[in-house]
Image 1 (cartoon, one colour):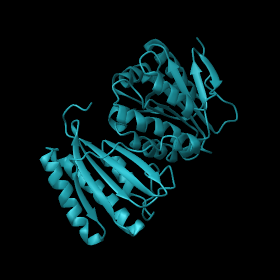
Image 2 (cartoon, rainbow, N blue to C red; image 1 turned 45 degrees about the vertical axis):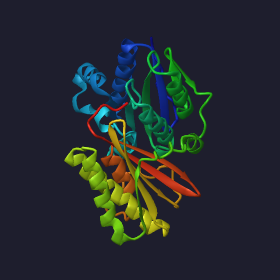
Image 3 (tube, rainbow, N blue to C red; image 1 turned 180 degrees about the vertical axis):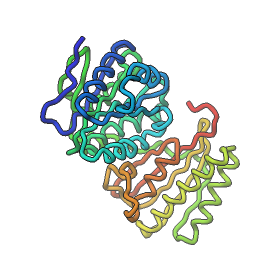
Image 4 (spheres, one colour; image 1 turned 120 degrees about the vertical axis):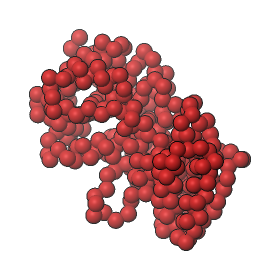
Length: 318
């Protein structure tokens, strides 16, 4: 089977590959990577676990022409993926980039899958105008129809059975991303709650999260990361809303969850997903939260914003 992976004249070519079995997966990605490397593109392969090992073995002769990343580690929180791939693209000094990215795989929780779908939609906005070809494999034989449906809406191009075609379900990047700006589940009644309004209260915020983390038996490093992430979000609330905010913390299915609610409105759908220059002021709070936490979920409207941070305790997550 021969697959046409190219789109002449397209700056961004964002494709979803619905593959039927491991052999098709290897054949298509092997051909994609070899063609990209031969054309002089900078190549990044970011897929999970065992699939990464198999691709590394198949493409070993290409050496340093391909960069490999285990997405099961680097992309455990889907909110980390865009900053990393954008940093890779920015470092290429005018070269076209070719990226294989597989953020959705069997075993992802429903919470993670919701953020994965949003991530895929945001790729179109983040890479708009960039010279990039991005191939996103989806295991059509294992994944649920809901995940395949989300992929059809987030990718301008679909590859199924070796045939490349425009997705009839794709909408523009902003509309597609907005569709995933969904209300978060209700905070449970047993959550511990703290209100804050001034910078002087940030020490109380940090102490509050630290005590909840200790009670939930979070590892010290995880607890420290969670405290730092919540502190950044609380400081953003104080500095940018003028009305303070509310922090809720509770244990849930092998994780500790922290939610910051305030009256601000995040108008940029890429907030927290774009790398910041060392000389830039501000804008790092949500980016840092994505880097430090196991999952970040956001719902924002003109009436207010809720940001929910998840940190795994080490127990099994459902």
